[in-house]
Image (cartoon, rainbow, N blue to C red; front, side, top):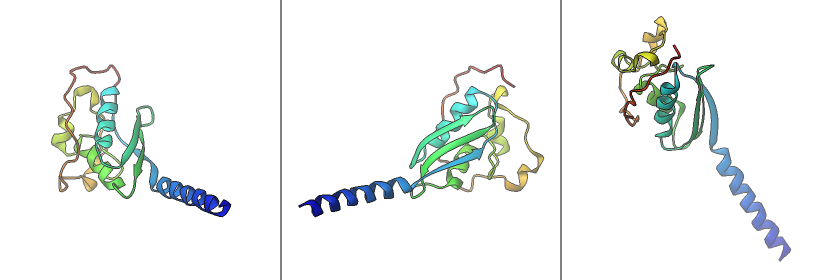
Length: 139
């Protein structure tokens, strides 16, 4: 009886570690300016299947995202952000996507970004969020 109990506990622990091992934590540089950017970036990422958390830090322009790498990829995450109008390490937002950002959300863009411009070859996974009309003082 003891052997069966120990075996059952070992199986549950193994399953727990296996499930946890699928989650990946990653930091991604994402351009943005303000609280509205933070909301837009995090919403774009959290709308993806497999993303458990997303937190963008406007002071260092870095997104920390936790996701199940069996359900999504860093490419899909960065595509979703670019489709929302923000440049990432891997993809740049289209000119029209960037131009739709409110004035306070527009940041200085890197001239080399055109080399990696994502031109909508993937269907947008970003769920559009209504603009609040509010803007911030941070520029």
